[in-house]
Image (cartoon, rainbow, N blue to C red; front, side):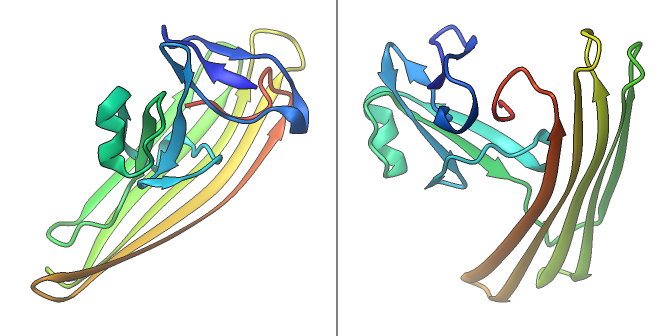
Length: 171
């Protein structure tokens, strides 16, 4: 299994389909969650708003109750009160190029908003012929029909190819 040691070092033992994403806290296997739902999918950083790590008895508060804790990734959601736009460009000495886009558009203030996160990445590694190609799109919407009701919907499509040292992207 691929796991996170307690010091935060990633250790992948088995490659390919035998590898499952997991992590350990104090030697105990933990649970990975996305928006507080258990998952084995690790999202790209372009979709992440926040990462929480709860270990020991505190992990029971998240509803999963794993003895090794819970690592939760909260994805970006549409905000209802303001427009926000951002573009990140990355390049390095190995010829890598990456563009990520983050757009939050309020359609109707305090009622309806849409957020678009996208990435196009061609990352070259220090070793010859080691590359990662990532193209992804994440859509999130928030609708507030009443004062005490809020509906959030999100979807993500991504293509990850290349020669990577680990069987799955790590967070």
